[in-house]
Image (cartoon, rainbow, N blue to C red; front, side, top):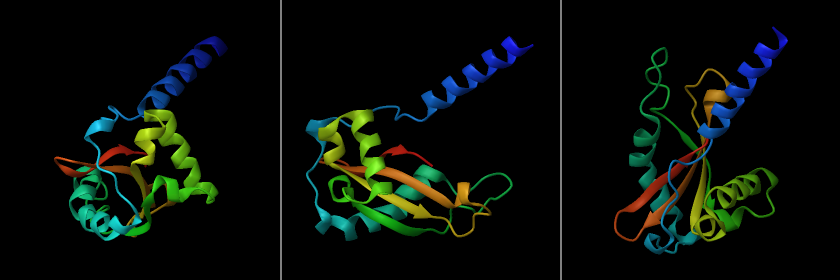
Length: 141
């Protein structure tokens, strides 16, 4: 019985770990260089990107993601020195490499309609395509 529980736990851990990865990394040559000056543009793009990324909610909470507050919106290199945000920069570098991470943004969100901390916080990684504009390449929460 102990062995069976151990095997099930390992499969659960492996499937969770595989889920916490981007499906595809952005193509470096297709990314536009951005800076903190683009923050207003990022905030405006969130009006389209958040509904595409999160939808409106869950079966039990259909309006969960219809309202949000931006906690952080900055290029990943600007997260250095802030331990919590810098950890996400490390994740982005691990997932897709330093060059992609340095051309990407961290957006941390608060969903005020959420009943608990797990649902109330969101983190997305953005980049700007030369052809198609802003897009989310990874949703952590």
